[in-house]
Structures are given as structure tokens and as C-alpha cells.
Length: 140
Image 1: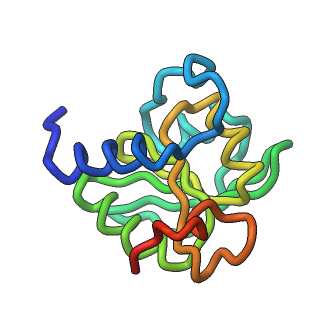
Image 2 (image 1 turned 135 degrees about the horizontal axis):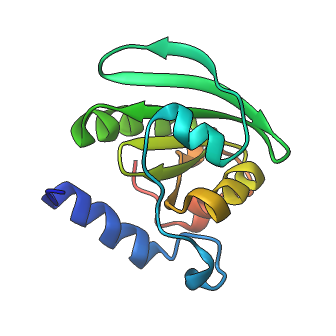
């Protein structure tokens, strides 16, 4: 895996911001990898495909934890570009290598216990109340 400066910057920002569950980081498993279908099977959902293109595959999923969107990407750059645009709409994002799960905070936190990954949060402007982005350190 080629580590790029934007990836390192994103990791550094998340670490400095103190994002995450606030719990024991060792409780998060190693980040899962695989196809959209393999990731969906890991979290016990049958994906309802919405987009099936070379660059992105996206499906609606539902399991005992709730409803969420699961997306896989052909490239790291494609994933980051999608995330940068999507996060303007708020929400909670569980990010792995070339995949993203999007849903309510409770749902995404539950997915993290199976898939691993890093929690990211969308814009505070679209996530009023309950967002740690409202701490005054938000730049936008």
C-alpha cells in the first residue's frame, strides 16, 4: 500500500482531534478488506446494490445494528474524493482501505467492532447537536 501525504495528514488530524469511540483502541479489530459482498457478509447484511460501476460500488444495507450505506472504491484517491464531497452532508463514516460505511453514529460504531476502520464525522453544519465538530475547532 502506498501511503500518500493526504492519508498521513488525515490520520494525524483524526489522532489530534481525539475522534473515535473514546474507548480502548485495542478493542477495534484490524481493518477488514475485500469486495462489497465480502464486507457485507462480515456484518451480516444482504447488499441492495445502488451503484455498480468500475470506480465505485455502493449498496444499501441493513442488519441488527441499523441501516447504512456500504461503498467500495477502485482507488484510494477515488475514495478520498467521494468522502470529501459526502462529508458536506454530515453523518458518520467508518473508513477502511477502499471502503466506507455511512450511517447513524450508533450503527457505524457497531460496524467498527466487526470491520475495524477509522471513524470520521461529516460537517457540523449538517450535523447540528451531538457533534464534536461544534467544539469551536471546526474550520469551514
